[in-house]
Image (cartoon, rainbow, N blue to C red; front, side, top):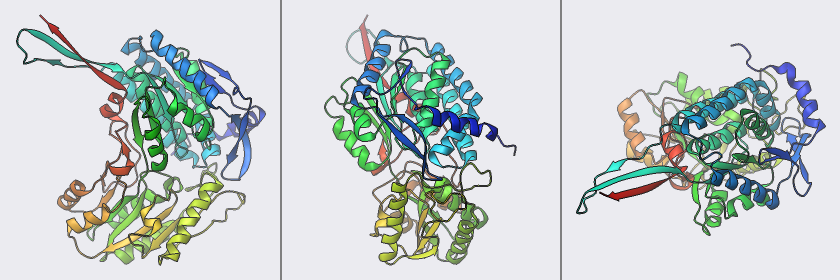
Length: 504
């Protein structure tokens, strides 16, 4: 495979990032925070500051929301024809592709992920999100009905944009998640205020530059970098925001629900997961082992849908554990800027400490470490937040590491002894989460039966850790969220249905 990222621009990119603090994007213009405050951006592969961004707060959020409100109410964006909105999204997709190397390298510096993942899982996936949702702009239709009331009637529904959307995205896949929020909202005719995670704000600033270049009207998209407790909270609470779309932790999601009660904002939540992986005795282990490994070690386990709980049949338990341990030990850890790197660092010292505490908790409660279990030493990146890919055996329900989302490269494993689907499903469902799941078996009857019994928004059979398709609904059961993103469901979530009846 040819290297899609032009790494020759890295030195100039670093110089540019260090030379000036990145600003907020409000009303089509870049500007400093009202307070004048900035905050540092840390490279997780080194632990060193390499850039800074404006620290927006409630004042800046107010300006951004009012800008989005003005753009929406004036019809500058919402009043454009569906075809015009589709063309604007397509122009933005072209610009994302044209700036792919700059986006991917910035994402790697900011988040730590391998640059190939930043390109294919970020740049390419983001352009596909834009193109897919551009197609929906011209296909949002109502229906006609025949009322049963006496008389002669013409009755129909229309779909209208919900209004101003507050989009809050996490730090694990910053660019593509930002695009996945704004693309359906814009296609539906909404305007947006985007608040990226404070740990990874830089690719959102590039997105702002490309939005301006694509010719979107002033206020259609506003981007405010800042902290969750200030900028994020102010966005959620703002009375002129009609909908919040949030991806992040379940605890924060619950707080958002409470904060949205004053004006009953519409809310979409894509939250945490503790996703089960089931390997039956008849599974093709040549695929199941690497698929399971990358399902938890990909992006250093910082994936909401990561397969973090493994249930393996006792007949293949030893072979699977040996294979997972070997795979973990073979992974090349390092800076995401190295083409050889397969797993980068955790995003921050806070996250490193969090993951470490879960491993310590599990071993103190009786779990055994098959491989990994601590900090990884990486030559040339001594200050980075690197964690060894870790496999834990002898884990059980009730353990903190089994019950709670770790968000790191830590796999908790259990064994089952028969193929009773009800028992396997009960074990898989023994969690407060229900985001994703994976099943490995050659018996499609068993696979489909178990898929029906698992309480999760997504089920993969013999599929490993592939990224979400923009056409497939994404979301969870139970405490993994409300609503769905992607597909028809994802764009309709940014609309309201209006019923119109005419007495003829």
